[in-house]
Length: 300
Image (cartoon, rainbow, N blue to C red; front, side, top):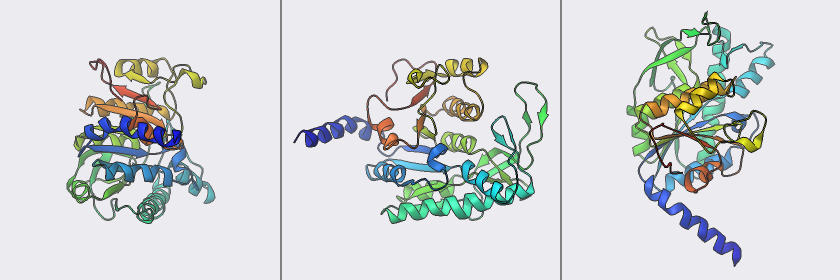
């Protein structure tokens, strides 16, 4: 009986959030340990299906860094990164496309269907929704320009297909591949793609599933995780080196998202059971939420 009462209490706690997010778009970026090769995504996907069933409109944007790196190494090609961004030559791009579309995107869509949900894969071979130009990237330390190869910066998004899928009760599963004006495919940072998609969809919030519980105020100390940070604190953490490496593009994507009008951005551990539901539907949450400086008393 106590367990049944506990479950009922959880549902009651979730009710205000279910009402708040009814018919609202929530963009979820799949990444981190949740996307490790061989990892079982069913826990996350069941959470996404729950969100859809209670009236929300979840939109999935997936990366594939670990799987891409594994595929490159299997083919004898050493991955090269510049401040968390993958250098992409033509050979690397072919591997990226194969992994993102034929492996990850198709597998996620099929997994949702096998769990009883409805999903549609969206990528540049079936719908050229992401329009980009070659990314010009300056080293944040030296200021020197870095040539990342066939890496793109999004300049426009055609939302027609994504909105049609959402309005039909399906979950869009989006691969971060873009096309430039000449038809050349470009590799796009998945965090940046998710951020831009959330802004243009006027999403209620964006959630980044990472391989960390959240943002640590003292690197290496799990007990120092911040529950809520505003944009000024985030910017200072980057300047001070508290946030570094591969986390920089992720938190920069969070900043761009809230500065673009999305109310909140969240970073949570994608491997933690039910972390997505706990962050969205409970008062305490389990990760770090990032808000604008002007927000007074943040809600979960």
